[in-house]
Length: 212
Image (tube, rainbow, N blue to C red):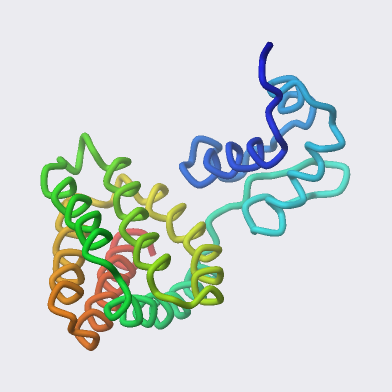
């Protein structure tokens, strides 16, 4: 018997499609089509759309439908102003708390990134970058900070996917993540904080140069 998919699973599938630009910004999602795909009624689909609307990934337009949100660069500026400070804080906090086992996972991610080719492996690189940050968040010891940044990373990850045509070197991942990893291994809180902020700054400057 086929296992019935849950609304949470459908929400995560649709969220990932929006983040990964499988649903292009501006397209309208049809309740009937989504319902047919997942074999559920329109009521839970509406609830899922409302959740995505709360995450600013969908825009509910009365008598029109649920439109995939456009990339709002003004909003992204405000996101980066927060993540620049909070991601660096999370990295600083994790230095004293992270285990050797978790550091080994960061090393594995970093080594994977060193093997990637920007043209062939860009999507995988974004995935590894998110895993790297997730490990740091999970080991920062502050659940409030973890919750805030997890929600904001939805939008930064989406911008990484959206920017694919403008990222031309793996160094945008490897250079600063390598510095963060070294600082964590050396238990240097100040350097970990500094390089986490630098990692964001490098991406933001690239976006300003190429897309604005």
